Amino acid sequence: MQRPGPLGTVVCTRNPIPLTINTTDAIDFGQVATGATTVAAVTREFDVQITSGTTTPVGTIKLISDATKANGRINLGGGEVSIWNVDSTVEYTMGQAIPITARDTRLVARLNATGATPGPAEAHLTVTMTVN
Image (cartoon, rainbow, N blue to C red; front, side, top):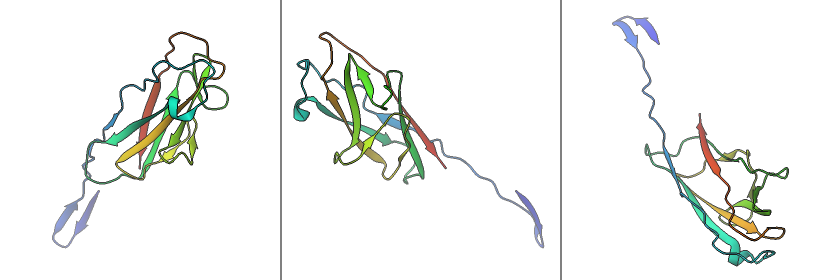
């Protein structure tokens, strides 16, 4: 933006800072008994960290999976993975905007293996950050 003033033209510019995030590379549930529903045996924490800048930006994180079921959870070999906040009080479904409240966001992936078929299974999860 340029604005003429009594001392000449003042030029204001913005220099955007690229924002980068780092996430846990893989969530491995290991071997789980088919039909298992015990939370302690099938829960894994993972991390989304903002690694650039020094402040917490205003914005959201979205989780997207190519294996999303109609209920917004992830299909993993017939079982179901749900994503929760670290306190397990709020469930986040795929595509839901999660407000950024810290530079380090801890989430919990919970596998319900009821309905899963025996054998290895894999699903992919993409983390997208949008800031204002």
